[in-house]
Image (cartoon, rainbow, N blue to C red; front, side):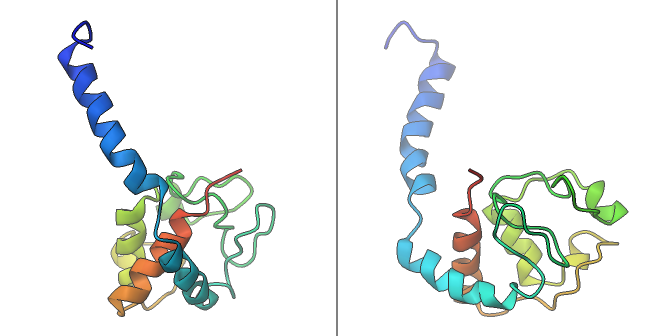
Length: 130
């Protein structure tokens, strides 16, 4: 490995440390999050080709915000420049979404129970696109 440039060695080392944490969410948290998701199921589906009042959340993990083909987003969310990672999902769901993206159409009061919120985010992050 001494042939590799230092930056590449550091990147490979970080990747090998972070990958297990990213790839293996706590299965119990994901299952609890599936139950919490029932709060969202009136407006959102997790099926790939099913759009309800809100966009499908199938494959939401690290998807660019406001970019699901076939769904008409508000101008505000369509103009957003972030991805749905755990940090942004948590921020979006812990408070009213309009506090994160002013002008979004999503009406949601936020989840105040920190454990339920973390479990829901774990579940949503498990919804990788296939």
